[in-house]
Amino acid sequence: MTVSTYFQPASVPEALALLGEHGPDLLVIAGGTVAMPLINEGISLPRLVMGLRRTGLDGIERTDDTLRIGAMTTLTALADQAHSPLLADAARRTASWAVRNMATVGGNLFTPPPGGDVATALLALDAAVELTGPDGTRAIPIGAFWTGFLGTALAPDELLTAITVPLATGADAFRKFGRRAANTPAVVTVAVHLGTQGGSVADARIALGAVGPHPVRARAAEAALSGSPLTAETIANAAAAATDDADPFTDAVASEWYRRRMVGVIVERVLSGLAAQPGRDA
Ligand SMILES: Cc1cc2nc3c(=O)[nH]c(=O)nc-3n(C[C@H](O)[C@H](O)[C@H](O)COP(=O)(O)OP(=O)(O)OC[C@H]3O[C@@H](n4cnc5c(N)ncnc54)[C@H](O)[C@@H]3O)c2cc1C
Image (cartoon, rainbow, N blue to C red; front, side, top):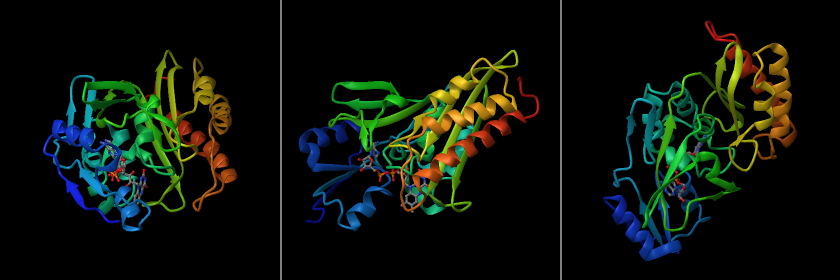
């Protein structure tokens, strides 16, 4: 069966009403870069499709200490903003120009691994996601958004409407390692936020992408850094711990073994790069 109806609601309330009316029979799409290939190849066969392009959910707003990113903001717009260099970097390293012009930040959170490069950066930045349903909007930490492979905390009658990012002080770094330099799926993606105090790491957030069912925090690696100066020894300990934090898989891009090896290598490179930054307080 092919798509019989394509809805283009002009607001979030209109979109929620359609979702309430049609329930699971209605496929929600954002930029369509994940959903449309599945439809075109006959893997997904929805009768009813709802595009969110006209709901007004795009745009990036900055307050003093927070960035609010509408779920329908394209990866091109995220790459072009100057408020968060980490997010701009992550967006630029996702897919190709053509895909980034369509793909949305919200959609990146739903992408099966090894996708989710921007989602990995958002996890390192301790973002929160806003989920809106008939009873209003709730915000949850992005780490609680993923519940398993392709599983999310989004209720059937809700839409992901925005992502908020605290603009904390500290140092950030993003590194996506793939088999080519650009436009490549990740073997592993690493995003790091480090806060330091008195020469020691006070707040470490290390997020890993493409090495588990969804982006994950490398908690053992973070613990290995916490309270210590960023030296070659603590970096090596954190990189070794990160290989245990990962839960990699084998696919056409890389084997489980290679992915796990590269977690340690890339975490070590990213942390060493941060340690070498001039003027860093550590
Ligand atoms: C050639 C190619 C290369 C790619 N390379 C990369 C890459 O390097 N890195 C990477 O991370 N990704 C990559 N991707 C995957 C994809 O382009 C991105 O993850 C993109 O951000 C997905 O966003 P989208 O808006 O297109 O999602 P869509 O396809 O529109 O959405 C997929 C599903 O997510 C859900 N969804 C999306 N938005 C919402 C919302 N606001 N509310 C409720 N549900 C929603 C819906 O169920 C929807 O069907 C690539 C894709 C292609 C085709």
